[in-house]
Amino acid sequence: MQCYIIFQPGYVYGALEKAIAVLIIACPCALGLATPTSVMVGSGRASQLGLLFKEGRFLELLGETSIVALDKTGTITKGEPRVTDIYVKHIRENAFLEVVGAVENTQPTL
Image (tube, rainbow, N blue to C red; front, side, top):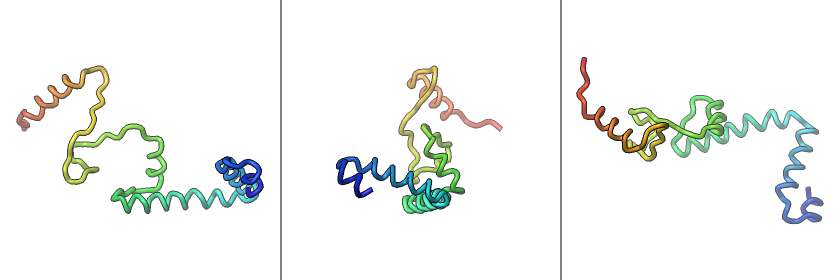
């Protein structure tokens, strides 16, 4: 890695990539330790930020997530639930908000 950095300065990412490839080929058990370690560190960091994951696999799935939808209870809030963005397919945002407002103003029937 040292030679790579000396002879091709500015390509630290490439040097690191090659070093990791050599480690994985030389000792595949390192990869087996890296995944649980990264999940543990990620869960710890999320915990510091106030996020709790039931299992590590949910943290791994979060990387593939593009949209998060929350329910009315506001489980992911700071105690002040509020709508930040609305994404509705096949209807204008204003029309959707009119429907939501009408539903909110109705009394529940038993």
